[in-house]
Length: 237
Image 1 (tube, rainbow, N blue to C red):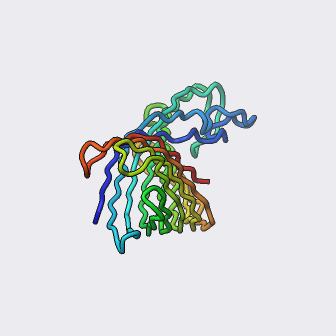
Image 2 (cartoon, helix red, strand yellow):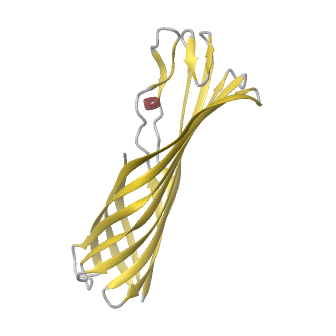
Image 3 (cartoon, rainbow, N blue to C red):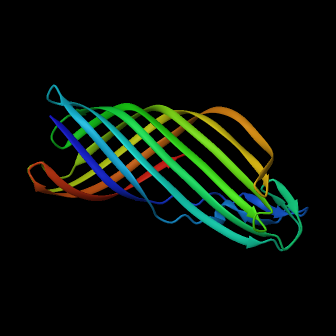
């Protein structure tokens, strides 16, 4: 007994915080912060496959992937410091911010009934942030990169509001997990296309947490085929 699901995602990253990225030099007044990047909806994929065992048990694997983009352009109103450089007022900044999410998980699921199941398993979450800022049409470029590679364990539950015999289905689910996060970040600088230097923060290992909540509504078209739509939230601290 096995099952498979494939979903197309429209995923939106939350707005980054408002810490200064480019600021007045020396006053420190922010010219560009993370909050200036407004991420729209981006496509992604969410696919899972499971195999039933021993009646009420199942092993399932799931993969989720998306790449989200945002941009921000401005001209500095005065002397600036940021993205690896200092310079005069009137400098043009063209920034592109990209976040890539890659998640895979393997879970053991136990069915208490046709409507309620619980799970426990392993999950990997990879979150990569890249921000490229070009000054004065390629005179100089600052490239920030940050990688968070999280590996940990999670537990969760799923509840079906209606009986499985009903062609209409409404499910709610939730998961929480604790992860060991290997984090690295730094900035590389270019003059034109020529590499001129870099600053690295080094590697940091810390404990992080994540939670996922969702609700899906579906209709069984055939005995073994259903179409669904829903909303889900992935929170990572």
